[in-house]
Length: 127
Image (cartoon, rainbow, N blue to C red):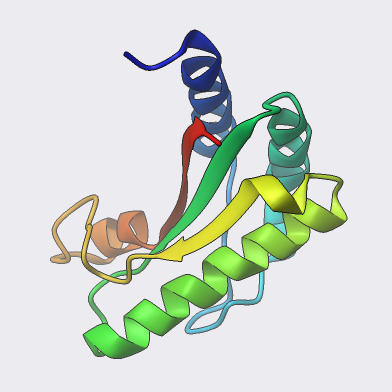
């Protein structure tokens, strides 16, 4: 069974992510300024999760090659890690992971659905 503190941390990070925005420039790993408030809240939440490993997972839409999207998703996840560390999160508990286009949240058939696939997610486990 998943320990309750892991579940609580996961729920907290997911709520913040779903309520806010983590956006990047097109075909780029540069964070948009409208993401900073959400990321600041995530950094605070991460500090309430001692002893946990937080994977920052980057995802992309299906535009471009699988190889390109894989690299882009990793760069975006690393950009989020760098921001969270600057905002006070513990670097040792953060891990950047890229999934590219391999785990779509929606079909890549409309611009709206493709936007849903360009995302950052957080996955929590015990260290």
